[in-house]
Length: 293
Image (cartoon, rainbow, N blue to C red; front, side, top):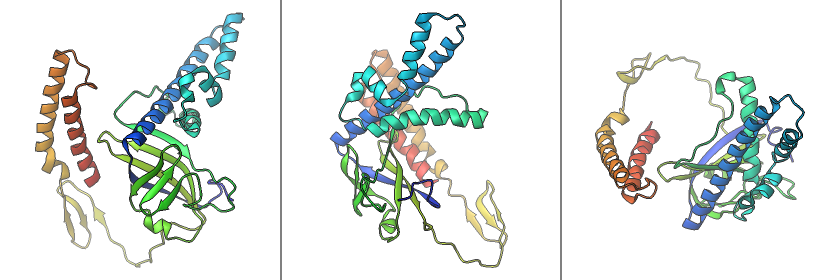
């Protein structure tokens, strides 16, 4: 069985999932654990850099450096922080968080404009990564790994179990060729929508090549129209934001009033139910504009 790097063609598939309340709690736990491990790796890296500037051979400093270096793996970090031993936390999520930290340093060394790895702050969006493993399988398909499609309407994920799914995955399930699932990313956006992004690999192309038309056409993108073609065809600008900006402005004013009221009453915004309801409404309006664009 070939690895993802050995496969010739790669494809990204993003589908929407509909988890239960219990599954949402598991996603939240894994997202918090992944963010904590990444931030802990950033903190370890900063402390090691500060300790490396101490030129004197102090035993306490050297012992601290050895402790920090040993903690830079998922097993040792779980032993140090016992809450990471929670059975709901996916072990591959912890490994991917550490790998993402090292990948951030690799990106910084290649492109210095990206900046060094920084702390990830807590937000309304959740995210963590896992991997699809093919244990004792001779071929890799969409239906025989640890992450697999049970049918056209359900997907099974580690720790989460069976989830209802909606997306454009049916045409891939109908293919008879071998398709391998690599990294799997589970996300929740600010509008409380849950998604699964799958990294797919195969030796056969996912999209068939279009036939050459043996003619050319020029396209001009401008502000008046969406585009103007060289043959005279014009497509009007739908102006998705302008059609909804009045509703968005009204919702944001209500959100601002509820924020000021919560602060005046010395209540946390996360515990203010009226603020959270309005924040979700504003996030859904932004998501609607984003999806249309």
